[in-house]
Structures are given as C-alpha cells and as structure tokens.
Image (cartoon, rainbow, N blue to C red; front, side, top):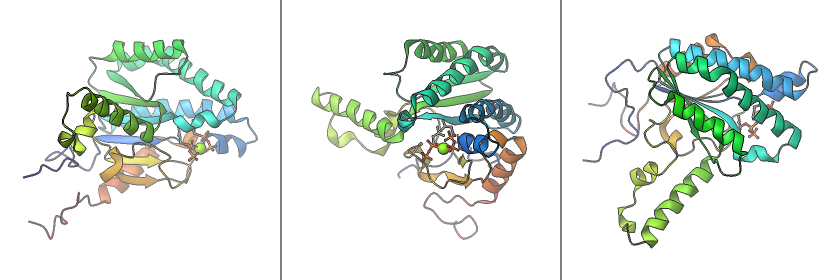
Length: 252
Ligand code: IPE
Ligand code: IPE
Ligand code: MG
C-alpha cells in the first residue's frame, strides 16, 4: 500500500492546531503608504509584527513557523528598498538571536545563499549553528527563496547523480524529489496564511503546499498579531482535510 505522503505528522494528536504554519508576510508597503510613511517604515513595523507572531505561534502550540522574508523575485525592487530589507534582516538576527536562542527557538533558513553578501551568509549560518539543538519552535526563514528555483535545484542534483551513474532515473518519484528540497525533514505546512488581501502564492512553497489549507487575511502584515493568528488557526480548524480520501463522516 502506498503511504499517504501528504498526511500530517499530527495524526492522532490535537489537529485543531496546525503543526506547521507558513506565512506570506505581505502588505508592508501599502501599510506605510496608507499612513503617508516611507515603505521602509512599513518594513520596520513588519519586523515588530514578526517578533509578536513568533511568540504567539509558540504560545499557541505551533511547532514550525515558516516566514517568507525575501523572494527570488524581490530582486526586481529598487536597490534602496532591497538595501532596507537586507538591513532589517541583519538587525533582526543581531538583535534577536540571543533571545530566540534562550527561548528555545531553532532557526532554519531556506532559499539560495549564493549571490548574497558574505556577511549575510555568515549571520544566517551563525543563527542556524547557535540554535541547532533547540526544540521549542522551529523558525524557518525563507530568504532569497523561490519555489521554482528550489525545485529546479532538486532536479539538478538528481540529474547529476543520474549522469554520474549513481542513480536509476526510474527510482525518482515524488518522495525522492521531496528529499532534495531545501529542508526535507520539515513537514509540509498545514496552514499557509497570506496577509494584505492578495490571493496568490507568489512562488512560495508550491511543492509543499499540495495539501495545505490556505487562509487569506485582508490586513497588512504590520497589523498582524496574536489575535489574527488565532483567528486564522480557528478558520483552519473548521476546514476538513481529506488528502484525496473521503470525508471523515462518510469514509470508513
Ligand atoms: C512584504 O510587503 C515584504 C516583502 C515582500 C519583502 P511588501 O513590500 O510586498 O508590501 P506591499 O505588498 O507592496 O504593500
Ligand atoms: C511575496 O510578496 C514575497 C514576500 C512576502 C517576501 P510580494 O509582495 O513580493 O508578492 P507579489 O509581487 O505581490 O506577488
Ligand atoms: Mg507585496
């Protein structure tokens, strides 16, 4: 029998709380524009929202929190804005890493490291190294991340193994490809939240989202807080996940 690869690891436990929540933190620029402020101020307030939400996610029993911080396509923004976003990441790691570590948060980073400035790579590595043994909450930072790029990278590594005679192409199935993605040990997101009212994934976790529940909220990211997270989780709890099977009440 084929195992259901998409089935959540939470089987049998309290499934009203998602094990893995992934968030597309969108709307910083519009939040700022609505207040006559520069976009950079929206991003700065976005970091404050992130701090709140990391704490809230842990309090609510979420074990994995993935946040989309910079997409592969965000390079098309003006250089000054890219500089602001990178500056905020630097400051976030420098200021918050010690607290995250003492709170038992394990930091993971997905996305392309190549092409990033060396000091950013050093900070990302430091954050991962320092917090490696922590078990309270996994904070997965998607930075310079794009799902198509991630899948293409996995395909490239598999193709190399085939070319080197180390792998039979017939051995490549969906589970194999999944193991070549950036963080194969992390379960697929149960819930993906996007703020700002946009209704799209924007190249975020497209492989992993196969059976995720999607919740779109109209508020901009700087206004997101614990209550908003709770209400997204409540919406998630009302959904019926079937993974291609039958509804619990009709199935056996
Ligand atoms: C999200 O806010 C932050 C990043 C994409 C890095 P935006 O900067 O996309 O804000 P809007 O969507 O323009 O309002
Ligand atoms: C997605 O938001 C990327 C991040 C939140 C980091 P964007 O603002 O870049 O997405 P689009 O351009 O509106 O699709
Ligand atoms: Mg946006």
